[in-house]
Amino acid sequence: MILYYQTHSPFARKALVFAHEIGLADQLQVIHHETSPTRRNDEVYAENPLGKVPVLLREGEEAIFDSDVICAYLDTLHEGRRLIPETGEARWRALRLQSVAQVLAQTGIGLRWEWERRPEHLRYPALADGYEEKIEATYDWLERTVEPGAPVDIGQIALATTLSWMAFRDLPSFRNRLSLTRWFDAFEERPSMQATPLSGETFD
Image (tube, rainbow, N blue to C red):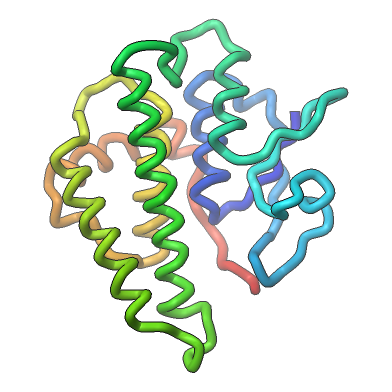
């Protein structure tokens, strides 16, 4: 399988960390692709009409895109414990945390546009303030909700890769939330995170 990737994407990294956690990373050929809303990548567009990574290419089958879908697919390919729980409250907690993490990353991306990527005369401070408020409220919720020592699942992977990206891009910090910080620091020591460091800049 081929994974179209980007070394500074929290979403692409989520898919690759997931592959490491289930023992399938060595079955992926990882190919870096630069993408952004203002920079077309024809190879990515050929497989994903949204022009975004990650994209999973499978021999003889249609491409799969979006990190949620890629992870769900990969979770069907191994014999170990499913990282997307199949039933019960564990499933809904994992999927809820994944959703929160995904939207947190999207909010961080929006804030970064307003802080530095958009031309200064086109920036909208009130929108940036709204993004910051959502980020801080999410950190507060995570501080109350995160479960140290819980079995690794898709929600935790999504959250760890998002928080790592928020720090990588110097976005509002979560580190004044002590429980969340302890949880993140422990998760970041996992081999899957150590094998997939963030790097690089966005080119628009």
